[in-house]
Image 1 (cartoon, one colour):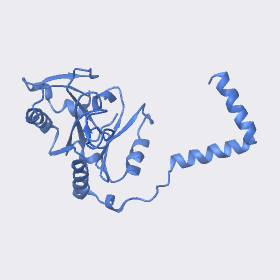
Image 2 (image 1 turned 180 degrees about the horizontal axis):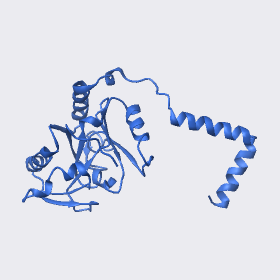
Image 3 (image 1 turned 90 degrees about the horizontal axis):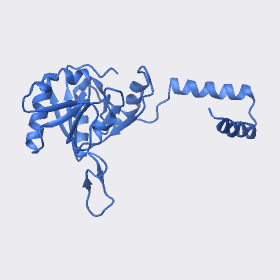
Image 4 (image 1 turned 90 degrees about the vertical axis):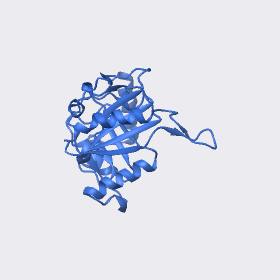
Length: 230
């Protein structure tokens, strides 16, 4: 900590008049609350499990403009991606995360699909990554940054494809944060909550897609796939 910052904080502590014992007690209370956060009121629609939770996520995600497709396993990812690109008349070119779930998809085996792994650049039309969790109450994706899953994959290309294991679906935001807190290395450098493609209403009366990020979002719900680990 810099000397200037320490001096400022010291003046604040002096003005508050807290003793060292009071500061220690306050820090312990905060630590306890972080370790076992108390949830607030939860929406009743999120109190579902199994197939009902998957169906709720799909309805909510489609309601905000995302496309949602369910696959039986990772081996269906390649065909789903190729079909999506063809249907939207997009280039058969993408950059993907170096995630084991995408390794299992065998994307590079398609001779007509150009695949690169790593960080997207401005010309890359499609980014493919994996979500840490899906939140059924609003059809939201939770993405956590990692070296193998660059944040830009979900924001820079005009088209974003996100793979979400159905085992990683939760009902509420509180459950998603609890899942994140329990992971090694918490907190990640960044956490992003994505609900549908990018849009803005700054220029009335219409909604513009792609103003601050991807104009298309495809969510691939994959069964029989472990939740992302790192």
